[in-house]
Length: 498
Image (cartoon, rainbow, N blue to C red; front, side, top):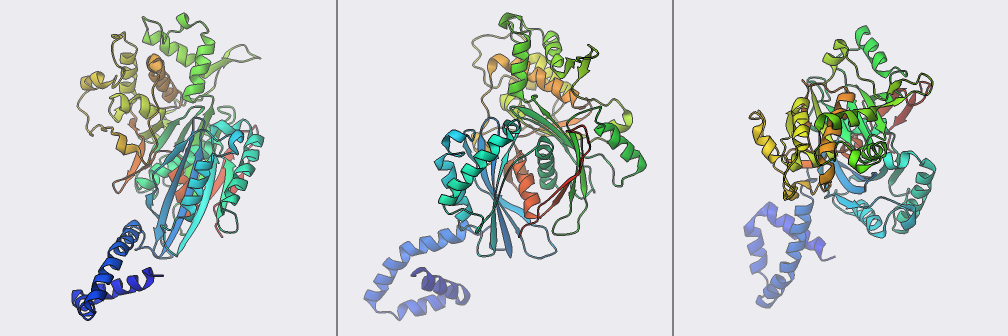
């Protein structure tokens, strides 16, 4: 109650200036002046702290808070995004985000989510950091680790809802959604994040593609270079998405939400089992005896390691007994030149390359040379840090500056995964093979990132900012064509908020 008159007095003094304050103060008796000073001094810090914590949102007439929990195969990440706008004809724009909280993989054993994470979720939703005109939403998105057992995931979601309900978080007060994201949506949201943050959604400039390497799955997403849907581009889309070519591609359309805006069609491809951890497990099973593994032998050979990693991308067909490719790579020039020139690479890509001393902007050919360098024999006394820093100095001078990695850079993007030094040669070789099978060519520009930067602030290079942007602006996601199943299905999921 004391804060209200203090606040009114503070606003009055700001409007009238110091003279009003002095006149008011000097009219008081001496003892009351001293008492007022003692009272105002601690309370003034509360007022200033409150103003400072909410200064980023004061200029917006309407705020939406999107709290997202990313349940990945190697851990969970909780982050809150704030979006604001002043006029009805505007989109909500990204203002800021909370520091990221990282925890272990969600599990049924601890009630779906541990008590600390549940309290953090409740705290972020209840936190008064976006004023009176604020709506808060919570989304739990489970990715590759849950796709194989969605029934178990649904049971876990029910347990988490009950735990949050005990903390005052329920559907009467908040918009709450929990679901297993299929690979196409995960890749598409990642694509939406980078192209929203770097202003590439309005078709005035070519959009960027993305490749994300997780623990269990890998995603590719891009939009063909075209401003209108000509007969030619329709033919190309059909070639790329043909069910015989691939079993897990999709064509998604991000349609306008709150305001009329250009639609964006995104081709996505998600490969379960080709995340780094699962792929390496398959490689070790294929070469059961450790001494026969070409990527870990004492005297390693890059080309033998490359053949071993390439073998993961095909399997023997039961009927024809011939090797069947698990990825479809287009060698058609018409498809190639309509694909993006630049791809953002995230996930494990960063941890094994830029964090180990390699530059952030490079080509596929340079990444392959780095893999060859990693496979060379080196002194066992090497401490294992910045293993690519020497190789980096041998590359031509970069046009764009390389990224300097500091621990403080990642408070909003998640911690860096610790690399397995014994697998360094095989990991980089696998990354090169994965990119080639995804159709990345030697002329494409690669930008390896841990975070996207908007107005000097880092945001995680994952699907979460893209989802939050789509949710805040009520985008309609039209699942136009899917080859996940032998039939083509159309499924429209809308981001309408009430």
